[in-house]
Image (cartoon, rainbow, N blue to C red; front, side, top):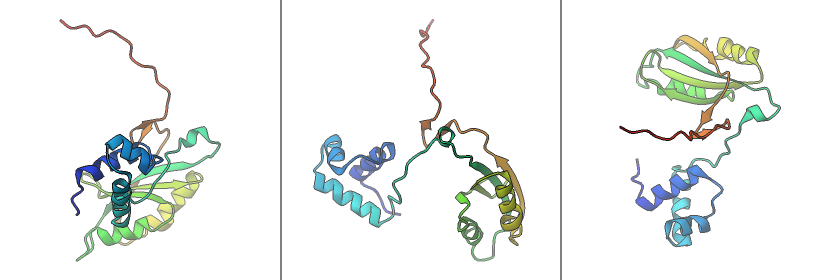
Length: 166
């Protein structure tokens, strides 16, 4: 794992807040040279520190009926590969948006997206559950998303109460 210098770390933090920021703006915000910022970003893209520039979408505001499920998966690790091979087999499915190795009651947390409940249920019963190493699954459907990647989706009122101290 590469050590990220202070300039790169600050660039990453600013891009995570808003990936549309230009190298020129980043350089101004950081008090650095634009070429230095461009070089740092290029290195981080090449090394896959920066993997993708993405947009966070509030799908509830779009007329698009998507269903998201978080599936808890218990598995038996493979000899010599542990959880890696099974995780890879699962994350290669296009329905799978994220896969996490977890501590606790289950081993993998798999985020799946489909057009409807039946499509997700079919994925679990036809693709995920039949994998030899999968011992059990528990599917949790997302009813509403309030916050993602630090972004709050709902408008909320500020708490304007006065603080009272003794």
